[in-house]
Image (cartoon, rainbow over all chains, first blue to last red; front, side):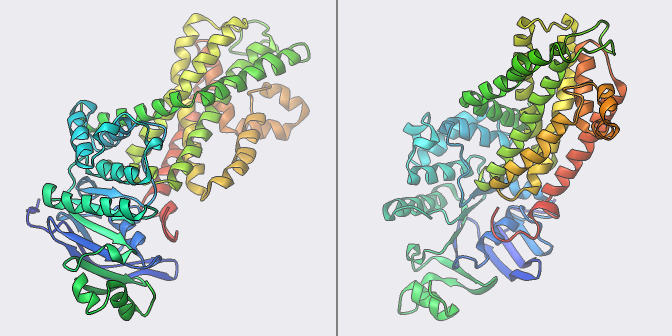
Length: 245
Length: 266
């Protein structure tokens, strides 16, 4: 086995993907270093979800290379997936079950026994400020709490890379800020790297690493400050893509 | 415990928890065959005499004949129900989070299938208990020997459900599947009437029923309930299980089938 400790958390090189005759991704490359935040900016339909589906192996990537913490997603999918925590756009927690039951189930999916998972569940719920809700049914939690619970779920197995697909979609301004602050804190505290896909540009800070994905191509790989120039990030994005953000 | 057994245990526990949370589902699953037993079978008792055919050693009442068929019905509905939940899970993120587990897909799908079958087998035993009070009383040993038959039949029907679920894009299409799969499978089988009786009225129907995997699942259960093995039925059920499950794994493979060519998210 190669030494993977120095490998970036995520490395995507020359990845293309087609749906029939339509090219969904063309020659996409990007790197997320260790313990870093990277935002994937794009309007709906830019290919963000397709890219996430390739990284998580919902689709097979046939061209290019994707590696999670140095593990090739195609040749060693088990090892790559074990190092990956994902928060999907759609809800993954079971509303009928309690938070604890849900998290115990998801720990088991990563081969962590209920006994071993118990302290970790308490730990991740404390991280996302949901410790008191541990035995509440998920359906009784607010939208923002459910999102934070999804993040706790994705962190259970101590992943090296966290993927968040429109994690703040459908949340109010306050809850959105809370979720983003939480993710930034996790990067600092837990050293987990994050790829954050979004179409809400106001969330970014000027020092943030941003990758602009538009019509399946990477148009820019820079910082939010550089992309914004003298205006706002949305204006910088519009100047680049010729589209309204 | 190894990681594999932990993962399986987790999937099975979730299936059980969900089931106990939905008590209406358990009642519905139990009432359905009981309606058939108490009403349909009682009505037919006098119309349809069943002569002495294996595994029965005496003339049996229609209630007795139809009981294994109703066990099959529970397994059939449970199999389709679990596939329905797969389609539902796919519309939410639950399926995605299952599939991003580092364990291979055949294992995850197999674990989900097996867990659903264990729940269905519990329903069958609850039904058999009530049937006992209705004086449908197979030999005591039958309650034990029927267990592997129920598991094998349940796995086969569940695998068929999974295969169907992989072909369905949306939840709304599922009602059609119920009409085109469950009812034909149930009625064109040996669940309600013996094959030889069917032949008297229609050779074609007899041939269809003889080719129906559900017939063989029912016959496997019928013989096992009387402590006997029907090797042909067991072999066909096992073969169907292998074919259906292999096709399901193919459909859920990231390189082919289900996810390919589908635009956007799942």
